[in-house]
Amino acid sequence: MDSRQHCFDLVRAGDKDRFLASLFAPEDKRRHLHALYAFNIEISRIPELVSDTAVGEIRYQWWLDTLDAIYHGEEQQHPVAQCLALAIEAGDLPKHALQNLVKAKIFDLYADPMLSMIDLEGYLGETSSALIQMASLILCREEALESAEVAGLAGVAYGLAGIMRSLPRHRALAKCFVPLDLLNQRDASVANLIAAENEISLGIVLSEMREKVRLRLGQARKMTWTIQPTVMPAFLHVVLTQAYLDKLDRVREGVLKSGAEISQWRKQWILWKAAKVESF
Image 1 (cartoon, helix red, strand yellow):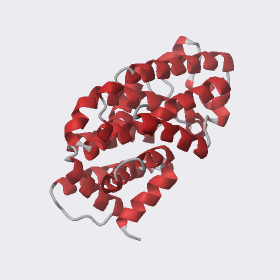
Image 2: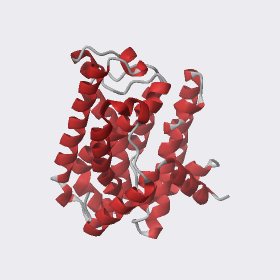
Image 3: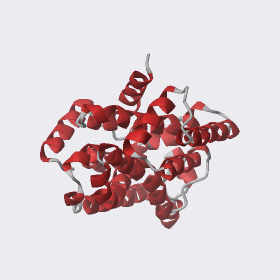
Image 4: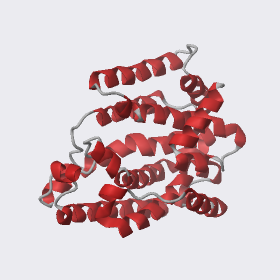
């Protein structure tokens, strides 16, 4: 299997939202989007593949070293690194953005809780928002610069919804992305979250997080006029945030055990409608 097919398969299986959205991008750009998203999958799944944080640190350092090698023009053997090198060239992607994405993900290795909503939004800015910005650069560098601010807001909205949808998986890993300051304000604890106890307090905390999703999504939508049609495929997956939010509103604290996934056919329908009007 060639490296391009490897990235295609990796994203199709591991990041369905961005994969489906990428199908609305021009064919010659699509493979570079898949390379970027495959890179994100590679670094995101490290904590679930290692049982020792020291091994995880080594893997993250390997990717940082690989980025150095790519930017020095060295030939790569890893299939994702091979395709990423081409994507970096196609979009003139900034090295610091890719490095910051790796460094932010190192947080996922440890059991330390996310301390505050400010910290969480900063984390999502380096990850979810940065992916939108870099995907935009791949699609059209000049027009991507016009939508940097809305990429930040949209990435945070989509990322917050993703954090909430992933609560069952994070609980199984004893990982807490729900900000500690929100938990403390409602007399809840990380232990309550992991054990799905103290549901009244946790229900209030989760409601406050849904409101934050609503706020950031609303702010992003007010700025969609800054997004040029050529870069819209980089943003298209964000339209699913509203559907996830609706599901989160329905399941409420039940999300701790069941998540808040929606069917693929519904995702495809929502993305198709959004692509027609070129907005999320």
